[in-house]
Each structure stands twice: as structure tokens, then as C-alpha cells.
Length: 354
Ligand SMILES: [Zn+2]
Ligand SMILES: [Zn+2]
View 1 (cartoon, rainbow, N blue to C red):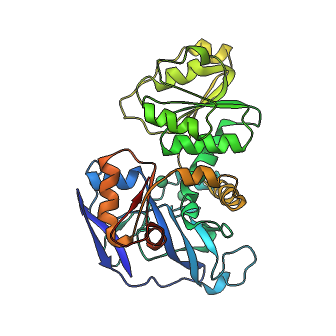
View 2: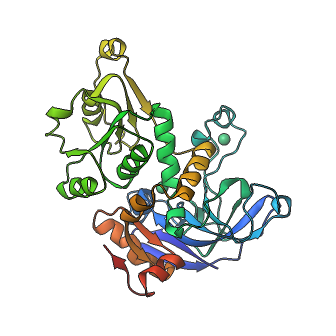
């Protein structure tokens, strides 16, 4: 079977890899589509130089083989089921896993391909093997929605840690893919008002078309300050923490979801946090209960229209180099790669973009 391996900046090749042997608790998935995340872009553009590496951690596909111990186990995916796939390592043994915080598992992530290539998901492939416990059935939905299970689980995690409740007033800073998923989730979960902040005019217009109650640039927030119960920061820029706090009403929560440059500091008045019962919360990755919620949401179809808007382009696995190049060339929401993406784009050597 073929798997995409990034061998250096701007260089990716398809390697032939033996079909993985299943353990008794594993399932084998035929990958329909795999989304390209920031991680894949950074590996390809050389800002995260780890080579050779098999990336791809946002996979959706169908179960084609089931390990003996989980065959016909109620609740466990069976042959033919469409699933979204959790490709993170969760050791279950380290302190964070034991605390139920497996998003922060201390065991080094990933394994290797047969030739020693580092795997960071290895979902840009024809098949992946994964523990049945880390696959989630999504019913019959578009395969590319199944491939959005990982980012959606991250957003569910973020909303869960925020303490968000229906009726809350929400602001999202950063209208990229993750910001838009936050918007979609909070709207579906009954935010009374959900607005978005972004520097880019086109992204603001697209967020507005997707149902944001208001959109504004960072300089145009005067009318929105002090009016939010939860603020999600999905664009980790200098000043974003201060801006998010300014958007909060009393008892507001700021969730730092997006990554920041290591040297970005935030200045916050300690008494302001005390006196106004403000919270600043970090959110990173996802945990099994977030996956369960995300998979159920995908199956419900409640977010289907939102998810459709977030597919920027589709490519077959043979064109993975073009797909990765697109993520470097211009801002994208999600670029999808795989046989289902190829089928939907209509031809193996062309892509359909919107
Ligand atoms: Zn991702
Ligand atoms: Zn662990």
C-alpha cells in the first residue's frame, strides 16, 4: 500500500509499505480522505524539519479488517463502518493519562514505518492500522466530514474546558479553520450570540456568510468589549490575550486554543482576574470523551453545512505534493487528500477548488 513520506522541505514521495498486521485489539481502515493541518504544512515548508516523516492525523475511512478480540464487540467498529480515527498515542500509564488528561500524554507520539520513517499519524495513505478503541463510528455521512473528527474533537475539548453553556455570548479571535469550527460548534450548542475577530477582510466576510452574528477587525471592537461569557483565541498573536480579556464580561473565560510563539508574553492585572472572576484556560488536543461527542455530532449532521464550507480543495493521494504546496501558497481552510477526495474532485490529476 502507498503512504506519503515528506523527505525534506518541499519534498514528498509515495512509498510502498507492507499492509500493517493487525493485533487482536486493532482495526484496519481504508482511508477515504485525510485533511492537511498546520502540522503537515509546517513539515512540508521546512518550519518543522523532522525528516523523513509520514504525516496525516485527520483521517476518515472505512473499516476493512477487525482484530479477533473486538470482532462483534458491541460498540466497536465493524467491517464496513465509516469511522473517524484518533491517531494520537495515549499510553494510559503516565500521570496525565491516569488523571484523565490523555491530551497531555507523556509517552512520545507516533511509531515508525517498516523502514524506520517517523510516523506522525501516517494517515496520508491507502490504509492505516489503529486500536479499535481509537476509532469512532459516524454513521453514513460524507467521508470528508469523518476526516474532520480530529479537529472537531479538539474544538469540543476547548468548549468543554471553557465551561461553555447554551445561552452564552461567545467571541472567537481568528477566523481560520479552527476558529470557524469553534463558531459552528457554539452556534449548534446554543450560543445566544457568536462573533468573530480577524484581521483579514475576506475571512471576516466568509465568517459572516457562515452565520457569525458579528465580525470585526481587532481595531473595530469598541462596541463588543465587556460583553462575552467565553472568548476563544484561535490565532496566537501578541496582544491576543489582552484583547480577549477586554471582550469578556465579568466571570468570563478566555480559552487559549491556538499556538503562540514561545516568546509571546501577556500582561494581565492580577486584581482584575480576582475581582471579576475571570479565567484563562489552555486547550490543547483532545481526549476520548471529546472524540465520542465529536463523532456523535458528525453523525447527527448538525454541522454538515458548516463543514462543507470549510473544504478548500480536494486531491488524490498521487497528487499529495500539489495538495501540500497549496497549503503553503495561500491561506486555506482544509485541503483533503485521498481516494474519496479524488473521486469528488472528478479526476486524479486535477483538483476542484472553491
Ligand atoms: Zn489537526
Ligand atoms: Zn500517557
